[in-house]
Length: 66
Image 1 (cartoon, rainbow, N blue to C red):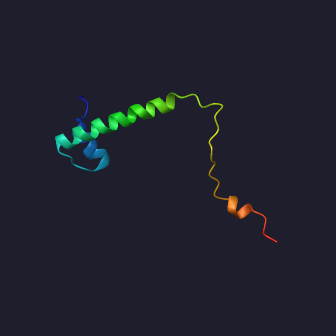
Image 2 (cartoon, helix red, strand yellow):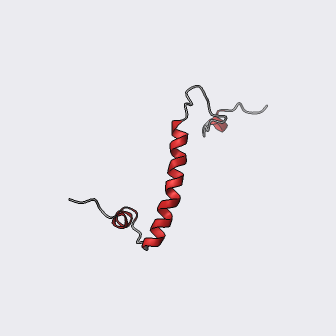
Image 3 (tube, one colour):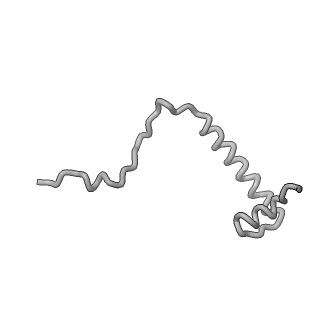
């Protein structure tokens, strides 16, 4: 059994039918993005904490103003 064609994969998974030249452009753009994501994942951030922490419950835990 052979691997599916990239056009078939895009059409089947995303539900869109792209012309081959447009698919090539998109794949090239996303390949560069994927390289950058790989660089970010390779960073050791064990001892680095985020500058902000999102907590949607924080406004509801504040003390009422007097």
